[in-house]
Image (cartoon, rainbow, N blue to C red; front, side):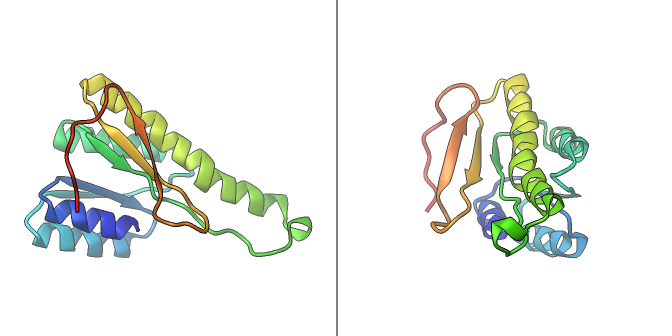
Length: 149
């Protein structure tokens, strides 16, 4: 979902910042975005580490000057076991990426948007049976009207 969104935004002419743990996949998406004629930045990031998220947002601001929209798509599935047989370590890993990681992204993204005086928005796809739904958080004022088809 994140790859498709990044490529679409690139096709639409946006400056695109992509982040993830796997360098090879990041490089592949980066090259596709740039080949479409857009500017891009790839930053290897583990969202479970808040300091890495802060660095990601700072590199975004240093490279492009502002943050207008964020697509928070990081997530892991975790262990597939009956809940009574899960280890606390498995649960902690799942929560550190899927909840704490998204919180870290929102924390630093919204702060950057407010600091820049932007009417940015952060999209956080909801995980679960109905993939593709998004929660839109308004950082300051209502977003500008535009459409993506």
